Image (cartoon, rainbow, N blue to C red; front, side):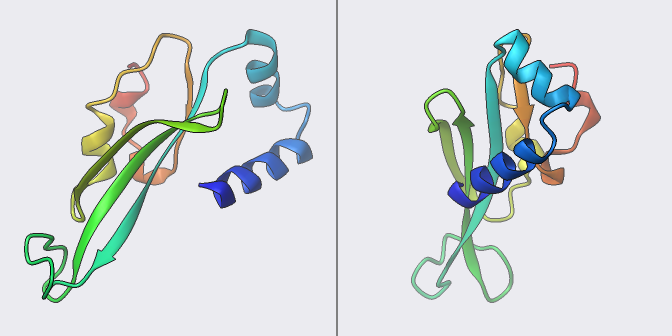
Length: 112
């Protein structure tokens, strides 16, 4: 996540007059980043972690709270669980700004 935060901070500095920057700074909205990482595991040692035919994996889903830059939510799922499936289980307060990647892209999430 540190690499992600670093890249995002650099992009934010490149576009200081953007609508997004103003929204975060002026509204004092809560800001969260949502992401996941697939962690490869040896299928011979972890036979329960089936991901592909010959590979094992788990997926770590995180919500990073940008107030303290600490994870506010974490869940570990099987490696083949989609990001959108986990995203539908999460709830944020109205007005919260959530940044995520295209793995979480589901237009029905925008109204939540």
